[in-house]
Length: 308
Image (tube, rainbow, N blue to C red):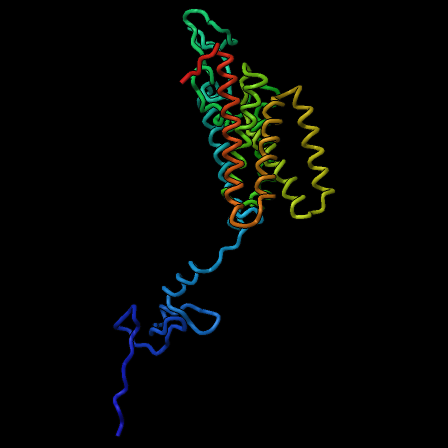
């Protein structure tokens, strides 16, 4: 006598007859639900669960491994878009450039800082409470018809960021890399404030110098062939010297020092549960030091008052 066979159906598609079980949960799955596994097939839910429980690969500094330098590409696009906005509205440069201390005249002109300042004039820059300039200036560049370089300013910086970022971002991971870039930009702006507060400074150079310092630190950390890296650093330092005659060496040096500090903290923090604590602690400490230095300098410029 023939016995009636039991009909099995997919647990996700009850109307579909099937005879294959998921090798992990042993539920029946139809061809649409089958996912190739090392042995047999798994259902979609088990595949997702396996991906969540799988240990994620990490960079040397603890960042998530990413083969595509997305942050570098986004930063380049952002700088180019801001530059196009400058071409359409040149007043953007005066509004967001890094300026420590300046005066806006009643006719809309820009004048050197003095305290006290004449009636009808108003402070601009950090002395006027425009603290955002510490970062916004790093995303601006010289207009096409101004300065020593003109449009070459943004082109050179973006080429440098393209070449360096694609090397450094995969070493650090996206979050670490972005933190280093922004802190380098901040470090460059603060040194400009401390040494040349009346200068109007724009450009991503300070942040890029910080990325260059990270390239050197990370190369040493992983034991890379330093001959090429040393040649690069020699060129970077030579440009730092030459920039004293044509652009803001203060911004370059500040970015280099801040980026180097962050990179050392990232690269040499103990690789245990304390690694993220040490890294975050150094970044926070650097922000505090730069912030205090900026506040003290602005207070000196304004005769003891701190603009809001």
